[in-house]
Length: 373
Image (cartoon, rainbow, N blue to C red):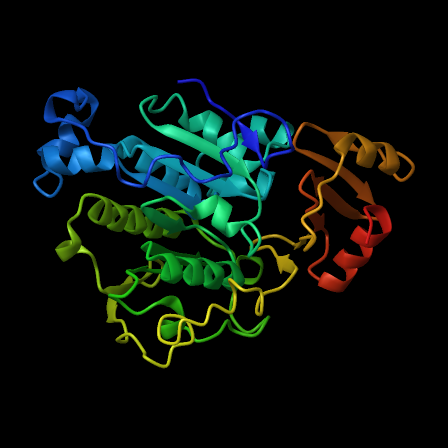
């Protein structure tokens, strides 16, 4: 199956992978006779079997983020034979990603490819039976309904708490299960969230830690093995959920430190009736009451800026304007230029990533000066 690379819709009559699937989630069916032989070893595993594989083939999964965790999760899920995988990511491939983001290579760096595009191109020939949709977009209150509706499962591969709290709001409101995961240094943790059944993210973490208080990839680094370990645990929970083996789904937080040789399973708190999200059904992040227009990107000295007005940009015009300040690089997805030691990358959906600073105020100033207020 040929890859169908897409960005957010631009008013043209081309396929829009950024909208919900037309069929209701999980509506497909596959008979035993139709299950391809490529899944034979997975079918031999008693926990999945023929019926479980048929459920996988009929399933739809949306992956939010395609960095370290996301590249491992995407590869495992596509090879397992799910029906549809939508990969949403706002960023592009850089050299520092290659140490742990297993789908990407040096050619992706040279081509300045968005991660969602590069991932789709790599995964399409891995399993042509899976519909892989790479969507270059930012998941925020204005886009999340369009991007995440109609799926059976949401898998977290984001790099900040605002995004995770937003996904949690959406999942609880819509009843879609999702799987949290995070890692830094040699340490990582993961747990599933089953709406109306288990504690949600805000039951576990009432609010995000203050900036600078918790370690990040920028301050503590990260090693590849912990990424693979946490992503594999997330993929295993995904298989349990998608095959209907709910009795096997973990109800605990798995915490691993590979360097210190620690592996713990911690009981999650019960659902809190006072929880703003799943208890009082107050969706502060989904409604835009909480969250920011800027995000400091994990593992990079960079800030993303998002336009609240949803306006799109003409990349040809942006490139012409930036010629006065440097030598911009341009492809169909983005324009990039270095100005005064800072790297400004502008996307057609109005977003920008300012590299060389972790200060949102500086990033906003650069955006306003060279892109527009």
